[in-house]
Every structure is written in structure tokens, then in C-alpha cells.
Amino acid sequence: MRTRDHNKEKAIRQHALQMIVRTGFDGLSMQKLARAAGVSPATIYIYFKDREDLILELFREASLQMTEAVVTDFDPSMSFSDGLKQQWINRSRYGLSHPDEMHFLEQVRHSPLHEKSLELMDPRFRNMMKT
Image 1 (cartoon, helix red, strand yellow):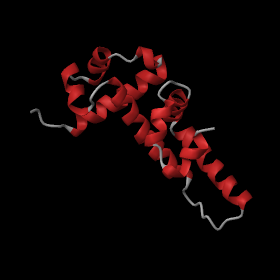
Image 2: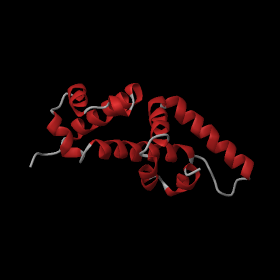
Image 3: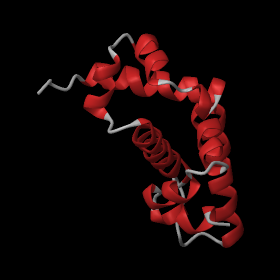
């Protein structure tokens, strides 16, 4: 069994996210991804079961990062309007500083993978995204 290399996995994740944002899900091929990440196609399968697993794992990671950013400085004891304002300010800041991740999250939300992605989402936001 081959050993896992954190740097290779990080490169695979970064290039996959960039490819999806720029060319859509149909533009993500494991061959192209391997070439972009500087690994062999077989290396990708050390970290991810298949293409869908890769996409869903990217979604899980991006949605968790966004959730953590959105709840920064939020206190449940805030008034509704102050809490909502704080969350939207945080979401805007996150979106401006992480445009690829936000674009990717929206792509998943409007794709056939949306239902599967809800299972991976932080429970704090899962119900909001169902609508």
C-alpha cells in the first residue's frame, strides 16, 4: 500500500477546486487533474474513492470553512437583526477572500450532487440550504 503525502493531497484538492470552478464538473477529468497536480492518476485514488468522492470531500471542507467564517463574532444572544447582520458581513468577507470556494459551493448547490452534499454540511446551515 502506498503512503499518503499531505502535500500531494493538498495539490490534488487545490487543482480540483480550480478546475471545477473554471470548467465545471464536466471539465474535471482525473487525467487532467493528475497532470495539473503533478501526480499520477493512480495517486488520486489513494486519497479519494472516485470523482464523486473527491467533489463531495471538497464540498465538505469548503462548507465547513465557510460555516466557521460565518459564525465568527456571532452570539446567539444578539438581537435577530444584529445576528443576521453579523452573519452576512462574515459571509461577504469570506466570499471576497475565497471566491473560488464560494463559486464551487454554489456549483454544488445547483447540481445533482446537492442532496448528497446536504448530508456533509454543518447542521447549523443544513436546513437553510434545503430551501
